[in-house]
Length: 337
Image (cartoon, rainbow, N blue to C red):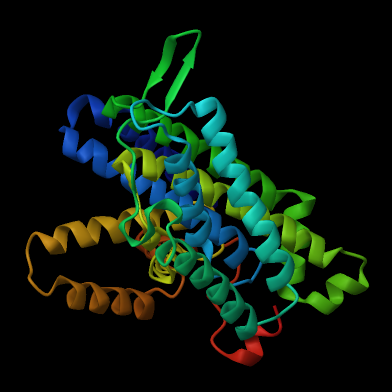
């Protein structure tokens, strides 16, 4: 039975990959752009799940890393030409990583609900830094009129103005980020991160450098979020303070929970499900946000393990979990991770 379940998962995964590769060939431009947007949000959710699902750290500032990378692209883009991806992409990811290092080094000295509050405060500080000052256009944001260019000696290697090229770049980077997270959580580093989540005192007594492990995971997570933010700013040609706000961080946290906390593919599934649900409801209902909320609440009650648990129930097999069952529900529980 376990062998059949494994074959079923592999077959379903191969089918999804084949459909993703073939989508731009058959689908209209709108759906190609929509799928690219969903993949970028999936990358952001994937980054958050590394610290929430495997580290037990509920962060509400990941949108700050997402938005910071977008602003780096906007500030590095000339008015009449596209920024060089050779320079702007590493710069955006490094700035996001540096911000994550500073915020993580301070926030990780707290635990539980206090960690949530501190990360929320840092995210809001960065939001108001860009919203209330002239940095990056203030509350109006920045327009990026020309997408970044990947070229060597005047020869363009990748034209991001082409929707198909952008889609395949987003798909490749999402696949790369997924493989990176998968290998991380399966490595001794990932086991140490999970050990600190399950019982910090025991992990310390066994000699694990808990603070360093958590900070490293937080920085890697911030850099992946920055990569998604860079591509999002390039796709829409616009970056605004709202990209750094806590509303986006909370939305991404919903994606993680909806897809399955502590699973590698769950957050990506949750991102596609939430964005697809919003798109379908917008087209049919005036008060679509209320209906969306009710659907999410129902899913959480029916399947606390997320959509992956529903998929497992549909084929009468237990879901393979690699993380905690859900975000802790009380201050006492949060203080133990």
